[in-house]
Image 1 (cartoon, rainbow, N blue to C red):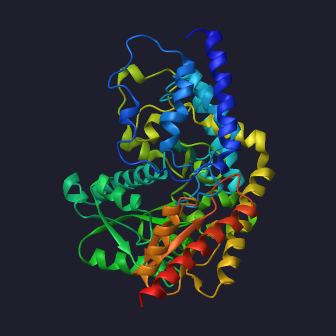
Image 2 (image 1 turned 135 degrees about the vertical axis):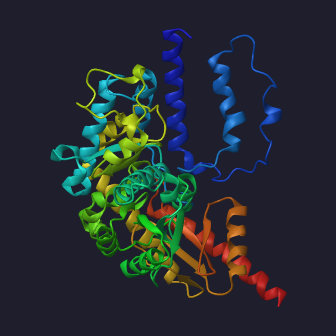
Image 3 (image 1 turned 180 degrees about the horizontal axis):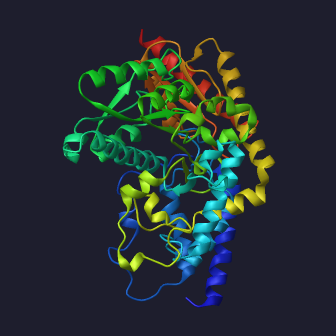
Length: 480
């Protein structure tokens, strides 16, 4: 492809993207295809000779769009948001054009240095304790991971390396394997499955602890678990506090857990994957109370802060243990400036990394903090609007406190009737929700996800839910 053809292709794609996004309300949010739908639409082998980019463009609607679930539709209320905006899309274009692999400073100095500065900008926006920021002059600093799952695993591996070193100082005759088989980590039973998975990948025991009546993990629960495990000869080394659980957007008591973790020399990691974006608004920062006691903190701008996937920001008070755990230093990756700036390959699982800081830089500059705050507050207001609609119908109930952009609700009655309701809602395809379950109670999750979402969309979604509830209750009445 020559430069002129590229410019024409890129212009056409920009037109297509804009039309797609600005008219996304008109599309059915859930596809109707079945597994294998694409195979008859494509040749069995790659073309031997070049095809026109215009032919590729023509095939997008034919091949790709029938199988797309439209996450950015205001009718999409499943999971949590995945962020997206025009500035971030353009930043991804530039990242793709530069196409550097920023594993060391010298591999592309701008890639590393912009990331350091953006993590300081963002940390200040959240009012993170200064010990987490590179600009504080201490050991702390931030890094962009691919996902919160990676951040949880990276923190666990850093904590594991730290604990092995500490135990060896007390028991120099113990082998690594002898120590590792005694290690144990903790989180709430409400934590995301990726937290428990980090234990599997890290090769350590992981204990899921009971939450309180508001689905929060409390300090006394952590303290009691640690006490019992130490009596059994185990070595507690890592705990995860979740701010904004996936099931119900509950907030573990970081302040209480932090006191226990610090006393017991346990690494405390804060996973604020979804909720962290809200902390740019001062009125939500009370939910972060105790973060100064944590060793690491993570959230996903790619969930709720208009930065396209992937961009999961992580801060460490002392990255030394992570760096030491991941440090393999072959001659071909050494450079004269080592030690003067971070080599981010030592802060993450993969060696390679994209120029992701560009997305933060573009979004923060083109939106500004005030507009990002307004965006978050607007979604929270829409969630409360939906909550009020649910409460206005005596057939329904709210099952968890509505704090941010998630509403957990159900029809009063059995789990079966709520499962039937969800099947009808998603089967109709006009809106998309997913369920969750706590203490054997099945309920529906309604997340405000789209940057296009307005009050009229909340009202329309509620009308759809009421319509399907009418059908379910009528069918139940007839069957009795």
